[in-house]
Length: 88
Image: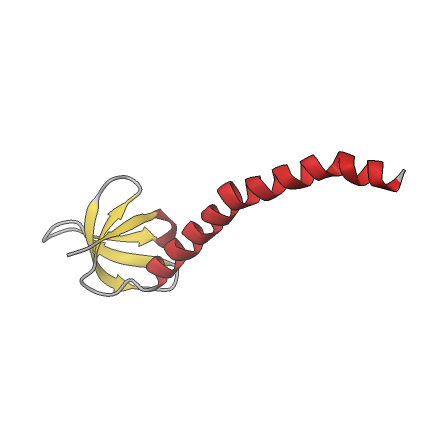
């Protein structure tokens, strides 16, 4: 009886393990890398926002980042809307 119960659960356990290693774990690693990138932003870094704007970081603050869109326009951007950092 006990072996039958374990044998019926074995496919579910294997399926969960496959799902974990192919979906959940890579998403967690990507989220951790993105958070580290956002926390490491400094003055002069070029970023792309979720809206597609290419900006230059002027001053990182606690919840927001002051970014320069062009020579005249400086705006505050929520850290959650930083898509990625551009490499030089």
